Amino acid sequence: MKKNVAPTYIGGQAVIEGVMMRGKTVYALAVRTPENGIYLEKTDLKPPANKYPILKLPIIRGMAAFVDSLVLGMKILTKSAEIAGVEEVGDSGEESKFDKFMYDKFGDKAVNIVMGFAVAISIALSIGIFMVLPVLISGFIKSVIKFESIYVLSLLEGIVKMAIFLGYMFLISKMKDIQRVFMYHGAEHKTIACLEHGDELIVENVRKHTRLHKRCGTSFIFLVMIVSIIVFMFLKTDVLLMRVISRVILVPVVAGISYELIRFAGRSESAFAEFFSKPGLLLQKWTTIEPDDAQIEVAIAAMKGVLEVEPQTV
Image 1 (cartoon, helix red, strand yellow):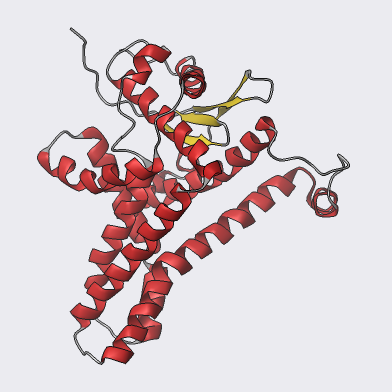
Image 2 (image 1 turned 90 degrees about the vertical axis):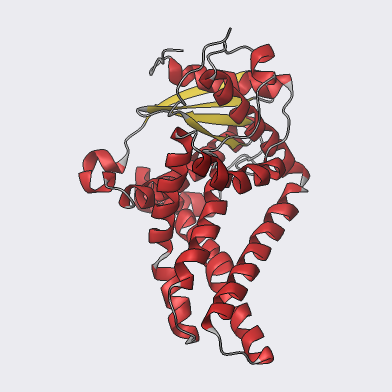
């Protein structure tokens, strides 16, 4: 009889031809190399909350974790692409003029500056597409149909928002390169599930576990959509500018609330946790694909990399 274990705090992320597993003090990046080996790199974590205790408070910690995850995610995606041989410096093997300019101007801080800029652009685009655009579209529909109810306007905005989000997820799930990432996403989840069930981390054991997990980033993003719809329904204004500004300003609050909910769901087996986890788990059927054994091996290598530093009793 297998023994069950409490859900692990270790989380992960699929990257280009690899998996990153993240513990409390270290993260491990494992990538399949062009030579068919496995590159493993362990890096110490320095969460901002360790330096600023206020970032450990409920809601606020969700905002901080969201930004921290984006920054780390961008960094390891770039790193994994280089290791996997996807990104090359250039046809001549030389640095671009932009790279040279940044390193000449900012030195070792160049990478952090570029990453910070990329994250800022990503956040701005996400807010624009999934928060502001639905307001504009619903406002346009209101001007055509001519209705007065604020509640109908909020409901319409929510419908448009979900349609854009689900349409986006469906379209990227059909891209061949993204499907490879989604296979590693499945390997990541199955490996975490294997650990949580107390099974030895070998390919045969990992393969039989589920590729769906309640603490998944996909579930978090979907939850952000749901929470934003609920929160914005209480902001009763039909002034377009005010609606746009409120959506932008409250994004951190929505992210913080969603983080607390996904954190609760990951630790609870209650009926309530199971209920609001269902939509995210269903969406993961798009964003995870059953991995092959070679991909599972990479996910196991990343997990073992974290466990070497942060052993858990299973």
